[in-house]
Image 1 (cartoon, one colour):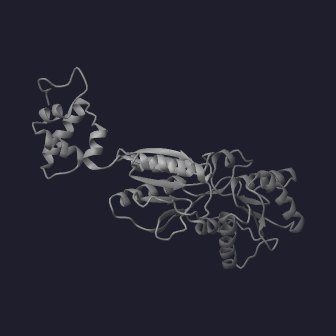
Image 2 (cartoon, helix red, strand yellow; image 1 turned 90 degrees about the vertical axis):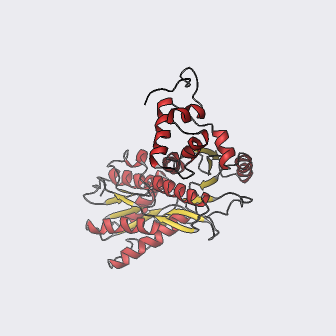
Length: 339
């Protein structure tokens, strides 16, 4: 295809230049770029070729006026550290980027006043939708005053069943961890986890009991050890477990920090991991799991996939085809040297 006379070689290409090069009207070129209008596939292809040849960049403001969309989505998080929200954001951006949609990240730091401030800003910018995520799996109240835009909740589900939420499968994750320990020959398994008032700790403890019962086993100490999401708690809990049940041969830990603390205590006591005791963590936080000695077998919550599916659900809702309810994303078992 040759350059049309009077094209925008010396400056930014205009829609009129695209139309001239493709041999169509400006209106047809506009419809081809917006995906609207009926036209022959070869006509649309000529327009797209002209766009590529001229390096044409559509005027986003004009597109917004034409379509009634801002081509932006807000992502609100309570996870200031980014440990959980960053993978969710990356997964959402992968899905939204294909549609040339920009993501505006807002960190509420768990503060309701800050959340309202960010929410007003997003509404003023007329975002097409909002994804809400956090650092915990506990259900949260729905955002107030957002009836005019679609909202999807990722990782931290909404308490309203009429909302769309995308969550991790903690039942499946706990099952994978326990079944893996049992498959490696462990019969005296301890469970050490975080605070009992956190949904993740309660539910993983509850779901760990099911595969144990299926294998006709019970926890080595007869109970779950609730505490903190920390290495220090993992070290203390391992000491307590070994005092109560010295024949414990497996630990299922509620997160990777706890698991690393458990592994530290076992190593200091001269207990072989995994020769004598196997250790399984949760989260697949590379910084923690790979630095552990030995590297941790763990459960990956598939956070990027949660973000990707949340974005796809949001796009469905933006197109007036919402799918309310809770959508569950499977976990994965990542096997390393600790088991």
